Structure formats: C-alpha cells, structure tokens
Figure 1: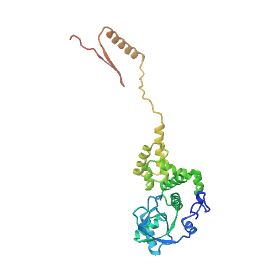
Figure 2 (figure 1 turned 45 degrees about the vertical axis):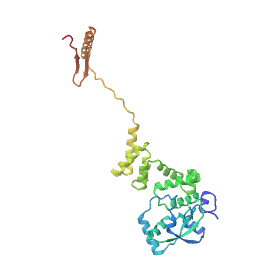
Figure 3 (figure 1 turned 90 degrees about the vertical axis):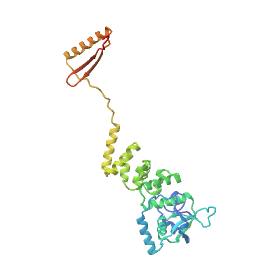
Figure 4 (figure 1 turned 135 degrees about the vertical axis):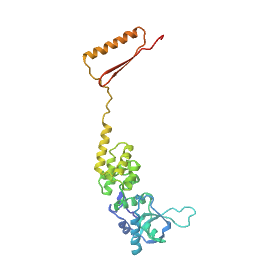
Length: 295
C-alpha cells in the first residue's frame, strides 16, 4: 500500500499538493469507531497553542452536523498490562479535542499503518498547509522536517513550493533567546520585530530590547531605530581620557620653573620637601610641606 505524502519525499506517486482530504480519498479505508479515551495526541504536532474559542466553535458544528470527516490514527504498540488498544492521531487533532469536549465516548476514525517518520511528516505538512501556525511553530516544523528527512533548505523549499529564503528567515528565528521566542509564540510581538532583533549580536541585548518593546509598545520602525543606535554605540571607538594641559604665558612659565628649582635646592640640603601643584581654572596653586625637625 502506497503511503500518503511519499511523493512529497520522492518515494511515491502522489502529488506534492496533497491535503488531508486528498489523503483520505486516496485511501478509502473503512471508517471505524474508536473510544475517545484510547486516543493520544500526535507527539510530532507542531502546534503548541490551540484556541479554546475555535475548538468550542468546531465542537458546536460537530454537535449540530456530526463528524463529517473522520480523524486519521495509527495503532500504537501494546504495552504490558493494557487491555485495550491505544491509538495516536496522525491528522485531525482539533476534531478529536472538539469531540472530547462534547463528552462523546467514540469518534469516527480511519486506521493507517505509518512509521514515526511518516507520522511526523503528515502532521507537520498538514499543519503547514493550513497556514494557522505561529511563526515559531512554523519554523519548528521546518526544522523537524529537515532533521527527519536529512534535507537541505533548498530541497525542502522545492517540495513545499516555497522560496528558500522564506524557510531560511523562519529558521533564523529559532536562534533567538527563549523569551523572544515565547513572545512570538504568544503573539506579543510580530515576526518583523523578531527579525529586527536578530541584528543585535548579544542575546542579553535582545532580551533587554524585548522588554522595551513590550513596556513601551514600540512599533517595528521604532524598534529598528533603537537597534541602530545600540549597534552604533557598540561599534563606536572608545575615546581615551586625555588630561588637557592649559596653556600659559612665558612669565608664568618662568615663575613656575623658578619655584620648582628652589624646591629642588632645598631638597638637596637634605630637607624632605613635599609639593603639590594644581592647575585650577583661574590660577595655579602650589602647596609646599616642610616637616618640622627638632622643634
């Protein structure tokens, strides 16, 4: 039996544009009823956030019209001590969640035999086709597909019908520190905000600017301007502190040298003389200390 999405990875005869509906029509398997409690979510599911509002809307539709489209599952290896078979969702987790919220005991399903790689691929590709993922979930899905099938970015782009630059830009987001990724995942910042933050080299600065964006509600243009200033400050050469010596006329110079020579002559007699010169705004100040001896 030819597996769905095999053509996508170059080992079958299906087209690259298969959807879940295409998969099911291509495999007219018997629809069976499986206990809802015996089904587990797909471990490779790229979606980490499910809208409760949309699940409730879907549940209402299913309650009114019934299960129009079955979910697709695979049977898991039986564990010792389990009396009932366990199943893992391949496609249709939102429908399963909706049915579970309705309290139904059974759900319509089609049983397939799939490897871990095939299960992961179908789950990832199905969600990518729906275009409802956050940019971080999308980037994670690309990374998993690259890893599972040992593909290059260019090869994956061709099979997904996307530009290689699109995939590369999404994958760069995974290099951002976790707080930034979480902000993207929760849609507190936009993808353009995140891509701007990449221009900062240090993770610490990226997180610091993230806080500024959230606290001050910075738009993308304001964020880019802030990053430009931060990078300019970081790249500017540090100026050495140089003490400027004020200029003075010839007479004052002669006076200062005469005093210094006099102090040297006193020191030559064996008297320990301490002197301190200060160049103030309006005058020069010389403090002389001569210790008392045999007072």
